[in-house]
Length: 105
Image (cartoon, rainbow, N blue to C red; front, top):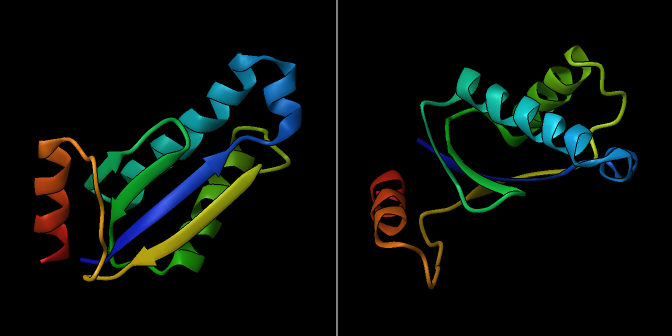
């Protein structure tokens, strides 16, 4: 499997409208991840590692459609990039590090 990092920051209008709208956008993206990947790890509120062989372009389109289905006209910042087997990291929890090593093997 290929590992991708997804960065999602809800559009500024949703964030300003209240945490509820921003959280609804985040939930739409997280729910969409389950549709394309069984394995993923949330690095934080705005970043998720996803194990899937789908291309970053397809993943991005998938998230945009998921947001549109929930009534969001704008996606906010969405960045999807593949991570190669030579990835380096520091300070991850032990379970996350083990997961990364397994996915990148």
